[in-house]
Amino acid sequence: MQITPDIAIEDWELTEQFVRSGGPGGQNVNKVATAVELRFEAERSPNLPPAVKRRLQRLAGRRWTRDGAVVIQVSEERSQARNRDIARERLAELIRRATVKPKPRIKTRVSVSQKRKRLDAKRRRGEVKALRRGDDISE
Image 1: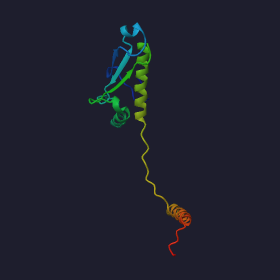
Image 2 (image 1 turned 90 degrees about the vertical axis):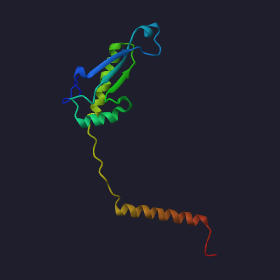
Image 3 (image 1 turned 90 degrees about the horizontal axis):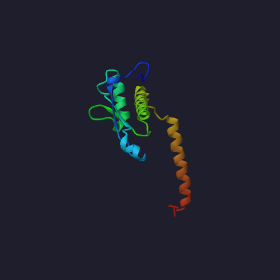
Image 4 (image 1 turned 180 degrees about the vertical axis):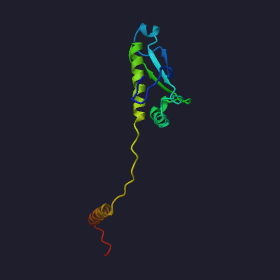
């Protein structure tokens, strides 16, 4: 399965398990295992760089297991083949998002003039409020 021009996942890295889907569907739901559970052994995958694995773990969240696998469950459609395609596409999209390197944050400083403007505005606002109080201390 081709994810990006650089990254491809081999079929042996994916395991699919089909289970019965819950919810409405009549008698068909009780007979046919249409829901799919796609498992990708990301931690052991030779095709993913270590940085992508770390970002994938963060993006996967609860879908990341203790043994380093990504588990995606899909039971949206009544067709087993369609659920399988959806699960594979979701995995591919998750890995694509993990390949994007986040931009490093550049620390910025507030300029002296902006600090002065802010303090002047606070001072003016305080003067307005002091005039409203009307309690003259000099009396």
